[in-house]
Length: 490
Image 1 (tube, rainbow, N blue to C red):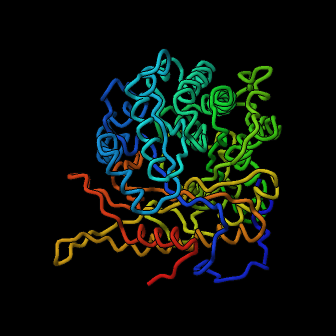
Image 2: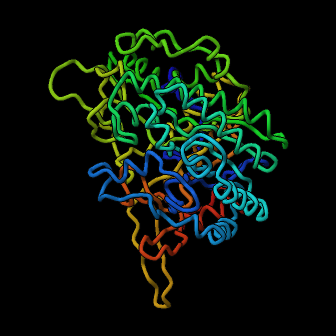
Image 3: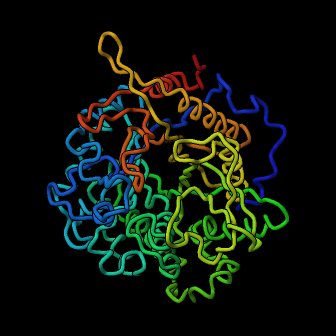
């Protein structure tokens, strides 16, 4: 996947730091923003919702910064109309949100919870009434705890249950949703959840992580198949992947890239789009698992026709093989963990990237987004792409004017977005069929293991009062949407 990423097209014109203005996006390009259910909804035990693995994980001492949980989060569940009006005020053309599986099926199985379906029906109808395109993600990491108790994503039964869940949601919303995304970042679900232990459910078993990879892939295929049987409005179908951009360092860099690219990118792209698993990755991981959980017919089920590939992008990695001398660098952007997110590639060294960095410690490199989009287009020229997440966390300061108005002058976030929209535009100019851009995130929210300490939103949330305050970045984005071109920066 990464063989093209070092071969930059020197014909690309514009500011070398990607700080262009005035670039106009094509007709039909959809500007929106994104959130995830556990990160914003709250109401963790309301109206029949069951517990998820993130409820359990966040309530386990030492797992989340400051002991934060998503019990209340941004209270979006109780402030839906206010948030819908906010989206309309910003001029969003689309809104990518996720559905909480435990709201629909409290234990992940059995009949639907009517109150949960009614909430998302109200959300979709509210978006449509305001002229905003609904983009539904069926799974953004909040697995029903009862399914985890029975093995979670290491179990084939969870993939089968996900297909049933997709059918239930499709039957209720399948005449109104424009774009269905099955999974968000299955790399995180598998490797951070079952390998490194950094995410829920917090397991640290390499074999379990690889089993989870396959069952997530299988769940995707089963969900698309189920949705196609019940939806009635001819929507698009997608999966969202956080495809990694790896840069090789030194003589051993290419081998390091091959190993981690296989785990991070090709174990998802190959089965979903080509109907096979890469043999070199099966060989690399043979001492961990024999892959016997892959059954006859699975790859055919996984390879469902897609209309769009969702792409999440934040930063890049530089890698080489560790020579065994000194302390191995592990700056992969996911923090310290007791297990590994790279089964079969433990001897790959992730080097500290040059700055500048976001508040997450991630390097800022818009060229990586351009390179990623162009590389995907070269490999899958007939498959349209959409940026389903891109954004940045920075420490925001709330200033209060003399008239009492709250202001957040988030110049770093505006600069980040300006540079990455420039990268997206350059990819389009190079022939990439890019259909839209969903800024992460609509509002500040529960940032997983970091709790409420990191703010990604273009709208500020006061976690004591839940007051929403649009930041300067939201006004900049609203102007971009209105004019359909990258605006200047004051």
